[in-house]
Image (cartoon, rainbow, N blue to C red; front, side):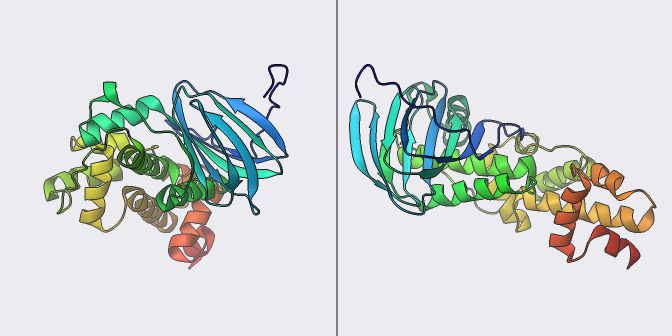
Length: 288
């Protein structure tokens, strides 16, 4: 690119998690006409997942390296924090961008993998295929398109799995991940279940649950699932619906009030989740 040329500004995202309250991660869906752009994220690692229905030809420059080629649906590029990135594309492009905070990656490295954060770096990648990143990206996208059905616990779980995967597959030092078998001990499991039951109306964080049993968020999620047969966010949603069922049958409170008491952010949020787990609406359940 000549010095006189200025990169064109890319369009605003079609969907964004900017106002969703997601911590440590920003997920945005873009649909841009032919053009070019540059970016430089000092405190975030950026992952781009192509959603293009037809392959798009790219020129990309980052970290002193140049790559030209076609990006099709499912192709991924990874740009570590502090690496300037320039791209030019010759037709309409659609993609999902995931920006994950450097300090969060460092925290996961230390707590989950016992890595020395001072030496931690991710590798830059141009066009790769990675089924796990693609699957996580599509789950983030599905959550963006819905009314936050999984909630904070779900997003934090996905972010932790993504961070561990990035460290294991794209870290300059390959860590060894120990997975503990057998699930949470009964005493710790009861402690977590009682906490969830006592705080259903709150926006429960994965970090809060993991701290109860002094574990990393990743290992807690794994051991909870082994013990209960479902992920923490699935259990939380199940318990919120169970509480809603009790209140619907045993009280005459308005459904919107029941939604808030059970940790849902709206009448429709409760209705969607309630119908998904019971096969009927809250109103139909109350009169059945």
